[in-house]
Image (cartoon, rainbow, N blue to C red; front, side, top):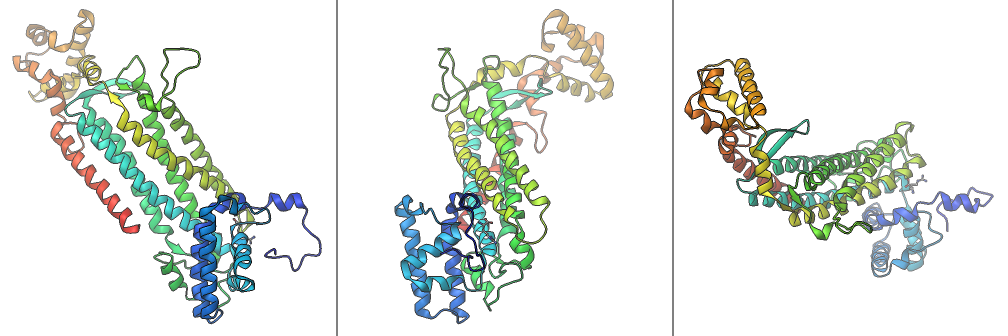
Length: 467
Ligand code: ARG
C-alpha cells in the first residue's frame, strides 16, 4: 500500500512514479531509519498510542528487517518501495500485520529523512575522523623515520630554503588535523534530533522528544520544526568540510607526483599503488595520486551542487531536498575510500634522502642565512641582502657556491665578513637558525612532532568516546 493514495482518483504515470523514487539511493539509510523508527515507537508507547505488546511486536519486526537486509542484499530489491521510509512500513506490515501501520502515527517522512541523514553524516564523520587519525599517525611515522634528512622548500616552485623532511611532512599533517577538527565541529552542531518536528509544524501527538533524542545518541532536540524539516546545513557543512579535505589531499597528491618524477627523484612510487603503461614498457604511473586529484574535482562539484539546490528553496520541506542525498553520498564515499588508501600509500612510499640532501645543498639556499650573518655583525638587513646578492652574482659567474668564495673576495664586498662566516653556510647551520616555534630547526620539529601526535591522540579519544 502506498503511503498517500487516498485523495488521488487517477493512478500516477508509471514513468513519473519510478522517476520520483529515492529508494535506489536512500536504501543505504536503512539502519538509521530502523533505529529512528524504534525510538519513535517507544515514544508512541509512552504517549499511550501503542500498547506494550504492540510496541514489542513492532520492535521485533524492525529488528527482523535489519537482519533480513544484512543477510540478503536481494531483500532490498523491492520494485514497489518509493523510499526507505515506505520500504520499512511495507516490510513491517508484511512481517507483523496491520499493527505495522500504527508506527507512522504522529510522524512525517520530512522529519524522518532529516533524522536519518543526521545519523548518516554523524557516522560518516566518526569513521572519517578515525581514518584521518590513522593517516596522521602514518605521516608522523614517516616524519620520525626521516630523522635529520633535509630537502629544499620551494616558494613560487623555485628553491627557497632547506627544511627538514619531517617539517615538510608535518605541513601536510597540519592540514589533515584541521580537517579532522573541522569535522568534529560539524558533528557538534548536527547532533540534535529533528524527531517530533512532524511535517512542518511539530508532532500532533505528545511525544517525549528528549527521550527519543537520547535513545539515538543526540545531544538534544532541534528548536524549530519549520527549520528542522527543511534544514540541510549539516549536509552542506559536511560536504564543504570534505571539499577542503579533498583539496588538501589533492595538493598532497600533486606534490608527490611532482617529487616522484625523474627530474626530482625525491619520492619512490610504491608498486602496489601504481600502474604500468600498455604501450611504454618502462612506465610506472602514479595512478592513486592522480585519481586523488580527480576525486577532489568530484567532491567540490558535490559541494557546489548542494549549495545551488538549497539556495532558492522557500520553507519548509520541498522535494528538491531529495536531490541532496546523492551528492552527499558521493562525496562521503569518495573520501571514505580514499583516506585509507592515502594512508597505505604513505606507509609504502620511499623517500630518496640522498637526492633531497643533494638538492638542499646547492642553489644558494643558504643566502638568507648568509645575510643574517651580516645582520648579526651590525649590517642593516637591506644592505646585507644587497651584498649577499652580489656574492651570489660572483658565484654564478664562477659557477660555484657561496662557501667556495675566498674570505678576500667576501671582504671586498663588506669587511664585516670573518672566517666564521663559512660555519653559517653549512646545511646543519642553516636549518638550526630557524629556531622559532613552527620553524624547521631540529629541536622545534621534535616539539612539533610531539604536539601533532598529541592532537591525533585527542581525536582518537573523541572518536572512541562516541563509539
Ligand atoms: N524521499 C524523500 C526525501 O528524500 C523523503 C521525504 C518525503 N517527504 C514528502 N513530503 N514527500 O526527501
